[in-house]
Length: 173
Image (cartoon, rainbow, N blue to C red):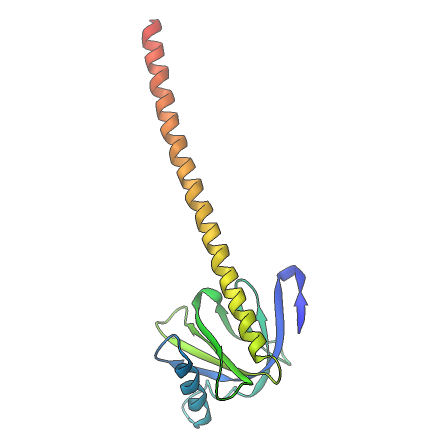
């Protein structure tokens, strides 16, 4: 594990098992089905070709980036807002995964990884990052609403001020 303070990222080396398109966005069954699907050879799927390679998961409040270990080539990037589920596979405690909605298509993908010792920790950290991201989003959204309310109030007061100036000018003439 390494921590990059300036980017607020955490990096974890893990084994990437693969990415599988799934029909639902959450549930342990989805992880199990995706893991089973990866065990089945599929000559038409390029998703399964890159599996079992060492990768680094870079986790930040903006998302999860999956980089190939040796080349640091970005394989996938998943904004936290697209992630709907993350868990350890009950039948295999060293395997964990998350489900993310594809940002451009109306599909969900399950990303599966293996970690010798940190599967539960990684799931917990991803969950914490997801909750922190949502909290920051709602705070930002709340601030935006306050700013809009203040702008509206300012416009109302400016109109009222203009009206009072006109009345005052009318009375002094």
